[in-house]
Image (cartoon, rainbow, N blue to C red; front, side, top):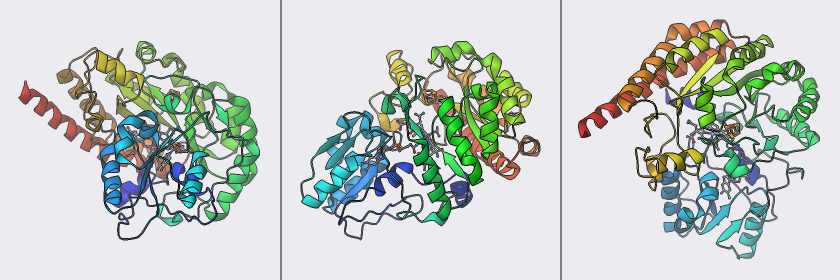
Amino acid sequence: MSAVIKRAQFAIPPLSLMILSSVEVLGVRQEICDLRFDKLPLDRSWDLVGISVQTGAVKPAVEVASLFRERGVPVVLGGPYVSIFPERCREHGDVLVIGEADDLWREVLEDLRRGALKPEYRQGAFPDLSAPRPVDKSALQINRYFTTNVVQTTRGCPYSCDFCSVHVMNGHKLRHRPVGEVVREVEAFLREDKRIFFFLDDTINADEAYALELFSKLIPFNIKWVGQATTLLGENPKLLDIFSRSGCGALLVGIESLADESNRAHHKFHNPAERQVRCIQEIRKAGICVYGSFIYGLDGDTLAMPERIDAFIDEAGVDVPGINLLRPIPGTGVFDRLAAEGRLLHPSHDHDAFRFSWGQEMLYYPKQMSLDQFIPSYTELTSKVFTPRRAIKRAMRAPTLRSAVLMFNMLYVHMYGLSRKDLRRQLAELSSVR
Ligand code: B12
Ligand code: SF4
């Protein structure tokens, strides 16, 4: 099962490390160790080990760091958690890279060559994405991944949803890579890997003119691609047509709550609920599958929400539903607010207690209902939505990529089953301490 999950979870390589390992400095050779596949290479000799630290996985990252440091290998820490909480990371690394490292990494490698590493490299202005920085895949073992065609065309987000850390890390201004650079990258990637492309941008339709130009130019390459968009795309037939003709097979859209008051409470203003059904229907009419990502338990949500979500999934024709619990991530607005309101289930200074992957136990108290009410209502919803029968039904009516839609839905039947077990255990534990 774990092998299936690795592939089905879209075991794709981390773009951060692809970018950094593509920085060429004379005399330096870089390798990527992906712990989903590789053993920790403690028996080899290294001049420097870099670790990407993600919020929610800080503990394993610092454990790895200490294993290398005990052996006298200097460790550099970078990534989202280091950028947001450098002070908490300082004692765990010899070098910290704070912020987007596209340019800083060259400096680190040059200093390494000269034997003059500094304890800290900090991003001043955001890197200028108009500079060409070709991404090279020679540090990757291509066949172990679902695909290695991961591309980011823009960074930053003009919105400020309070549960998200993208605008915190990458700023509010959308920064673009030149269209010609992205087209060249797609062409070069295709030479090594003909599989599907992932555009990792948080909102691939954020800048209509840019997206129109880019994806028109990608039509001749005949690729299949997936990405993330806002449902507003459904109101833009021109862009929808170009997306469809350039090979777009599926888009993840963040629906979050179907209650506008919930989205407003979390500073998400750009997706009015009343337009969502029609927008999703239009996207699917264009032959693009929709992965609809909901969050149940936002501040305006009540116990009436599960029924609405269930009906919405069928009415809009969501091909793959994802019904998430709110994950308050340290460093986001919602984390600070819930902490101030006394609604976190763990002490706010204990970041390790906030885990963010499967085994989705609750991390906070919902506003409109107790945990005793909320947890059963959530588990009942997921047990209704994620059944083999409904998985097959969704796959049969998917506009394209039917086997992928089936695989995802079936995987979720399994995963949400695990999540229900965890939540029921958590509820029993919470009741026993009362
Ligand atoms: C693609 C993606 C995924 C893919 C990951 C696939 C993969 N192998 O990469 C999938 C779908 C699996 C995924 C899952 C999840 N994700 Co995600 N994901 C993203 C996304 C959209 C793009 C990541 C990316 O490649 N960015 C581009 C690279 C270039 O940026 P970067 O990673 O930040 O790297 C730069 C710097 O941080 C730094 N850097 C990074 N690493 C290192 C290492 C060193 C040594 C150095 C020096 C520098 C450095 O330099 C890089 C270049 O500038 C981001 C949003 C975003 N815009 O970043 C969310 C994001 C990273 N995900 C997020 C979350 C919450 C999750 C989940 C927990 C969701 C969930 N509830 O399940 C899971 C966690 C899975 C896990 N176990 O880790 C959050 C993380 C928040 C945080 N503060 O850590 C983000 C930021 C989205 C958000 N809305 O807030 N995700
Ligand atoms: S959730 Fe999406 S739209 Fe909202 S701030 Fe994050 S990246 Fe932007």
